[in-house]
Image (cartoon, rainbow, N blue to C red; front, side):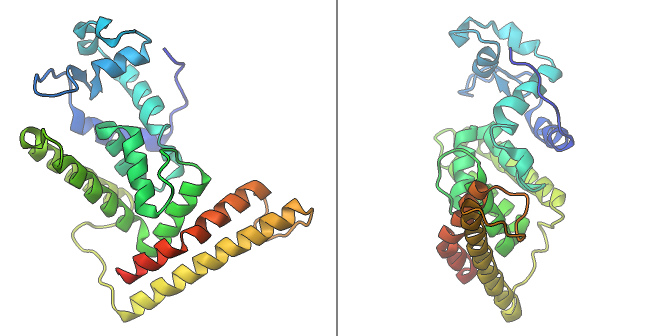
Amino acid sequence: MPDPQPTSARFVTCLDAVLRQEGGFADNPLDPGGATNFGITRATLARWRRVSPWWKLPVAEVQSLARPEAASIYQALYWQRCNADALPAGLDLALFDFAVGSGPDRAIKALQREVGARPDGFIGPLTLGAVKARIGLAGVAGLITALCNGRLTFLQRLAISATFGTGWSRRVAEIRATALAMAGSSASSPAQKGPSSMNLSLLAGYKTYLVGAAMLITGIAELLGVSLPAFAGQSAGDLLMQGLAIIFLRQGITNTVAKS
């Protein structure tokens, strides 16, 4: 069993929201996940405890799973896998719960597609730069809503949606509402966008593009031994990667503004 990791306050808050959805022990024969407790499946618990093959782990072990161990599993296999501490409040919960329900790889790739990043299943500097650029245009609320809508669309296409679809829809709606509240937004009263709002969005897009160019120039200067004060404290490599991410997202930024 892996050693426990330091726990952040944001993780604890998001875990509480996820566990309110998961509940306790269940062993529904129609659920492909089989026996679960705190939302942790038998196969996941076996992998965590290094039991192979997974079916050698007795169902009784799932039933007796305690919350502290479940929290460690969620933190290591889902929260940290999603690099959720690097995401804004609210978006961290939306992605975390998506990962719990459908797997981190699928959840991360869904987020990457939403922000125009390469869907490689890993959240690093390029994806974080893309997230920042998207939020600069649509706000955290817009990205949370898009991610949750995409998640629901995926769930509705599954063969077992006839059995579990109502519960899934309720869960996504509740997670979205909680995530928007954490982000300081309201699901019931979205801001109306008039002409002046669209002009501001266009300006924000060009400003983001210029920031990306400035990061590239500063990164190249750092490589050449010239220190510029604009982005002090960041390495040349980080500046180059983030600058490239923003510039390659310019087309995605333009499309987002056009849909506003």
